[in-house]
Image (cartoon, rainbow over all chains, first blue to last red; front, side, top):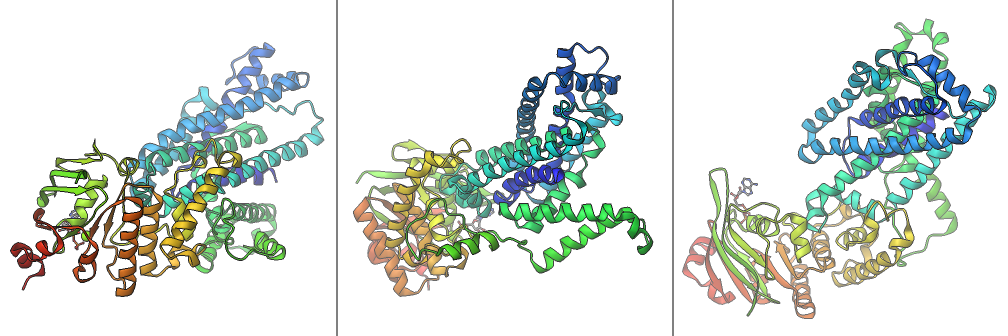
Length: 342
Length: 251
Ligand SMILES: Nc1ncnc2c1ncn2[C@@H]1O[C@H](COP(=O)(O)OP(=O)(O)OP(=O)(O)O)[C@@H](O)[C@H]1O
Ligand SMILES: [Mg+2]
């Protein structure tokens, strides 16, 4: 459920970028990793400074962070303040990375753009692995837990509830933003950039903004994941987990439909969980290493969706901003039906 | 007749091919002018250059007293120029009314305001009222909730006109608005253009090959061939011009 919440945040951000605006950001992991790295590098050092804990943050990481967590038991308020500040900082870092990403996006098209963005995405892992002051290189670092004051057995459920609440806020934000004149304009830019330009839209500025906002959201997702996992290690921020899977999830769910994002994410996360959970019992039944099973199965799902329902489970539909007041009014039952099934 | 658009010695080449070879033209405010010329003579390219889709290699373009040479597409729109497309370019997944609402710039189009409905509701309501009126004018009232990709070719041309009207532009450049449209609808479209021109004082420059239908609606004609203006003046004068007869109406 917590993983679901993190992916909802990342996928909503990708949907804004790709589903609504048509920017195929194959370097999504860049912003996610950037956010996670902020969470790994910043709050621990702040806490350690405040608590007066000695030791090199990277070399003595485990000792320092356990000291910090012990200190946080009595400093809950500061813990939360720094937690939210970190999310803000991650968002700012994400926006910065988005600005960098926008350079190729407004200059390149098609295959060239895809390859460039893919390379951008790879860079975050390489930097994390090789520049150890940031996130401890190949050894990784621990991330302090602002919920340290809670007894061990309730900490996890509370963290999950918190994550789901934050994801819900991001959902409401995305939904409201996309059901506005802005959402309409983004779909217009996606459908025909030149025509939008001829009708007065500065499409370069619009695309840059979208990339920055969506990178900020993705970075928040990455930071949340880092706090939830309690640690960051660079190699976990790979293109499969944070670029391809998000694409898969929004393709399954339906592009340019935020409800579809929820459905696609839920299906995907549940399936993976089932596969991982039953790996051992499946081992005798498959003629190859079960580790490959989840990749295979996910590939098959993508194929099935693309072949039989290329528009995804939930199709994109017109999203009127406010009713224009003409035409047949829909009955309440019809509206409920539409809400649930369209 | 005060010129609203003046084009002076505008040139454009693609690689070695000279497409516009020093175009001069002056379009009077509130008039309807037609631009004719054989296929490939550079008509669409001229509109592309005027509106900033492609940059000219030489010459100047002045619109309403402002030098707009080399401006971007969206900037010429801000100056009051809008164009339609030879091959319609609807926003395919948007409904007709959504298409009409795109040119109306709205405070809700920024990330700061978008999530807060109260900041853009009034502007949006006004734009919707305007769009409904335009839909009535161009005869798409029945189709407001239809996705534009489901429209017929003729309806897409009407949508092009509607979007241009919604821009609040002072001048509309139309690239073959009645090509491929049945004669009845073609007359209707040009009648609407005349109406809009008279009622709102909007200037039109219309690229059109179908002289039999269009000539009676226009105040003046420019004929171009191989990137230069070879004749201009009243419709009768231009179609009887020997150069035009030879290159265009030809044998
Ligand atoms: N972007 C471009 N790159 C290269 N050549 C171009 C480009 N745009 C136009 N041309 C060439 O310029 C010439 C003029 O084209 P243009 O579309 O302006 O003609 P036109 O008068 O609109 O013709 P039609 O009546 O067929 O629409 C053609 O030879 C065309 O191939
Ligand atoms: Mg043309």
